Length: 318
Image (tube, rainbow, N blue to C red; front, side, top):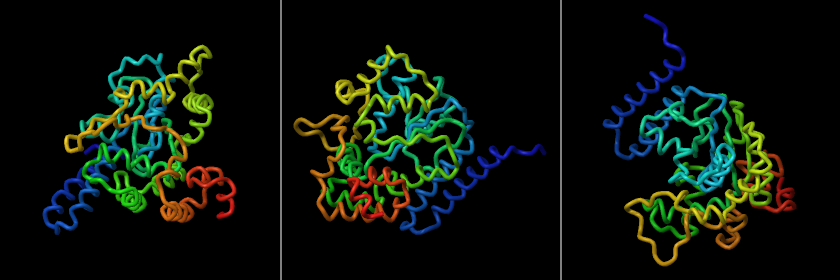
């Protein structure tokens, strides 16, 4: 009997584990159903990892939700093409790995584009690992929490209509899709498997978009034609993206409440520090304490950005 290669063997083991989990599911109390559901999903990702045939040309755009994912997709699209806006939706040129590809049984190798570009919100330990490039976009967690609440009201009807405080408590507990922001960020910034990762912050893109675009281009090995840079910067601006909101917006689920009045588009504000108008002092204090526990070992500048503290505040707690 021929020996199986390690990748195929791991895939076979993962598939067997998934099948066993399904059998166990029928024999355990319903109170365990949520845990088993998560276990089945995790095993599915492990199997996908094992089957992934990586290429140095692959580009993964990875973020925790509401951390500038669509913005990064647009930047990479403008850098890797002539920038034409002839696509119906951005997902056509950088599909969502866990929502558009995995459920359909599509592998990254099935993409015909070069480079092959995918978007993902997966935590570090579940992302397919290979020799490609991983762009990890990260944003101040307080702004993430506020933006996530607005997003949930439109696209996650199962979460109901929580108040700002109620949603913040869920966010802090990791009781939202993709779970803990703190763990997500810590995993990717730790990069224990030494993937080829570029960490880029939402703040730096807001402060100097052209410089951020150049960093991404350099990381991807792309030489920008000087004549093309004005077009790239203009099309990656929030103003331009708002004009083409339908090309970026998610499909509203049937159970979501109908919009009332003039509702903001998918591209909402795109600023930094909006949490100051939304969150109370107690929420901010709790977040800062959690940042210190989970992310206190980070470089001081990164810690300052992610925690939402100003430079003097960040230094005083380290």
